[in-house]
Each structure stands twice: as structure tokens, then as C-alpha cells.
Length: 537
Image (spheres, rainbow, N blue to C red):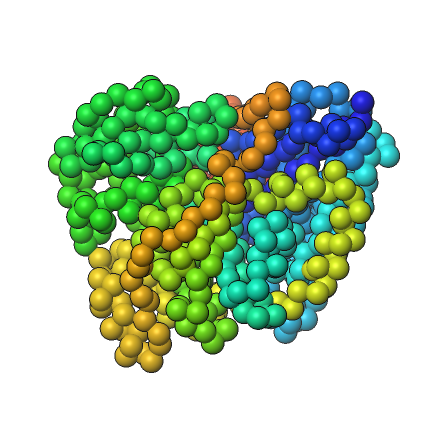
């Protein structure tokens, strides 16, 4: 037997396929329940890699890859080929490539700091050199970044969806923690990446979870709202019927008792329902206790809704910014490609109603995980690597750095006022008019929706899906002057940190919020706790 392993290194977690290379058939699929590095978004992972050390971040990532591929149910001695796809930061961490050049946008900033631009072209590498536990001689295929800001995952999004072949003005977005997007106008492509935040992946939500069995992913209306719960094959099935006004289950469904939490798409759907029914007014939920009850004791809070709306606001601001840079109006844009887990499971009409995609889009295509799909294509056809490099070279992309872009900042301020203070869209558009900008139209008509994939990962293989819960590693350290008072342990919001009797500090990486938190460090009464000095156990 000869096997291949394809990997998607996403911001919210890792995903893998085992492939029988003799017949190009997917055998099995394994995913992680979360990302192994501390932090909830891509900037957390980047900052961790720079401040704590690339060697530490690389070690955590490779440790997780090794744990994940061992769950695929194949003999790893028979692996002859691997492939990796993901955004530039995740791939760089896995390949031990310095990430400093990804942290600064301006050439002057890089020159002053002596930062060298790293090459991220397509290539064939030795996975054993990275520490991946496969046989010597295994080939690792990595697709190219278009530019250092526009990674292999963005190339996958454009290549696999059909976006590049579409002759009409069109937009593609990979919906996730870091929402990559591209607008095609004639032969010009405008790209951007909006830090939408972890809510789109079900994180920073009280009962949030990734798209996995037991996740409530949507609601379907039939007299009342029916919860749609993902089954063991990641397919949405009918759960309980809910009366959101009364906060009660009115009728049990086949998935009764099987809901464990709610995905980002489920929260998005709840936001759309709450706004449409008037349950959400001026940033408050008008229910008996300020909560939206779903099924199996899972509920959504107004804080959850705020997190989801901020994510939507970042994406709408990104879309608006690309349109402005391209010099086109909303009415010129009618075609939308949606990729990623959230782009797959979300109800496109509900998503359009609340601003996740431009309101004028009347032709919508929903795809699954294009990053894993492209990595799997590379396993089956290694010659595709050269074609992808040529495609990357040919794309004339105008990348808009939303951080610091005046248009994005102006629009996102409006979005925050809309989602946090309840500012109406009427006032929003009045403000746009006063600023001399185009207004945002209301959604009209019923769009034509084509679901290319019914689930995030189209083919799970004959052995099905495995979810890896035991991932991440321990960071440990001893601090000179530590008294063992455990103030840092008590302060940790995720209970990721413990202090032993001998004053050894241990941090579980998968639970830690990382450099975006530092509450353990701030809580230390002796001021000796130094998170950045922790190292792999």
C-alpha cells in the first residue's frame, strides 16, 4: 500500500485526510477540536511565535500534526506523500520559517527592524526535517502564497471555487476567524483579510464549538424554528422545534439529546431570527431572561450575539472597502462564492440579511473547506504544484491592508455603532451619505443558491471522522522569586495554568489565551511571572 496525507492548517484547528494513492480514494478524516497554540485568532498565534519563540510554536504545531496523523487509521510506514495548505502564518510555523515579515506591513518598518522577506513559493520539502513522524523519503508538497499577505489558503479559495474562471464581477470569502476575501473586476483582483474574530468558528461563545457532531448549525422554519444539529457525518439533521419568544421546546426532534453546543453559523442564524422577529432591539434580547434557548440546555446570550455581529461587521466593512478600492457600486456585484465551514453551513439568505455578504448578490455558491480540498488534489496529482505556482504568479492582486486603511476604519466604526449601540441601518446610511460614500442597499429578491458541498469536508472516507481532543502540549517554567502563592493560577480565565508544589508553572497550550491575555503575568504580586519565558515540557 502507498498512502498520502493531506493537511489543512487552519486558524481554528487542523484537519487531515488519509488517501489511498493507488486509487486516489479518501480513507479517513481526522480533525482537532481546536487550535493547539495559545490564543483565539491568527494574530495571537503570530504574536506568540514572535514573543515566546518560533521554536516553541513550531514544536507545538508539529506535536499536534503527529498526534493527528496517528488517528487516521493507516500504517504510517506506508506514507510516501504529504501535502500542507493553510494561511502564511500557520504554514510558516509548521515549516519553521521566520514570521517577522508577516507582522509588519510597511517596507520601511521591515527595513528599520532588519526584517527579511521570506519566500513562500510552491515546493517539495522533507517532512522528516520538520519533525513529522513519517518515513524518510516522504515528499511534502506545499502550494504557494500569492504574496506574503495572501496565502495558499486564499489561493485555494479562488482556485477551487471557480472564482478565477468567472468572467463577471464576483466576490469570494473564506468565512472564519480570519476572513480572507477577494473581489474580481475584469482582470483585476482586490484582496483583503478581515480579523473577524473567533465567533465565526464558535469560539468566544458561551456554548460555542467548531463544526463537529452535536453542533447546532442552523434553524429551519416550519410553523416554528427547528434546530439543525450536525450528526456523526457532519450532516445537519432535524432537532427540536423551538418557540424563541417563550424560550421553550414545543416539539422533540430526531436529534433530541444530541446537541452539545452551537457553531458560529448557528449564532449567525439566531441573530438573523432575533432581528427579523424583533427579539433583538437596541442591542438587547427581549426574552424573559435575556437569553435565546435552543435545545438540550444550550442557549445564546446577548454577549454571544454581540460577538457574532462584530464578526459580521468586520466582514461587511471588508467587502465595502474592496468595492470602494475597486471603484464599483454594490449594484455591480451580483455573484458571491462562500467557502469554509461557516460558508458551508450558514443559511445564505439569513447571512445576506444581516450583512455577511453584499445585499445585491443574487447568485450564491456555497463550498466546503477549499484548503483541505486543494491539499488533497496535490496528493493525487503532484504535477498540480507547478500549475498552482503559475496561477499565483499570474494573479495581479491588489492587496488592501485593512489595518490602517482609512475606508475600512471609517466603515468599521459604523459597524460597531450598529452592533453594540443599536444604531439603525437608516442612520448608518445617512452617515455614509454625509461622508460622500455609497449607501448599503437593502437585500432584495430571493437569491439563487447552489450548494456545491453539503458539509464542510465533502468526503470523510470509508472510515469516517475522528476528532482529536488530546492535543496541544505543556509550556513549563520556574520563575526566580516565585513564592508559589498561585495568584497566577487563580487569575487564569481558562484554567489553563497550574502551579505545582515545587513552584513549577505549567500551561496547557490548547486552553491558553496566550499573549492576548497575560492576566497570569499581571496578577503576580512579586512581578516575577514571565509568560514569554515558558518553554516546551
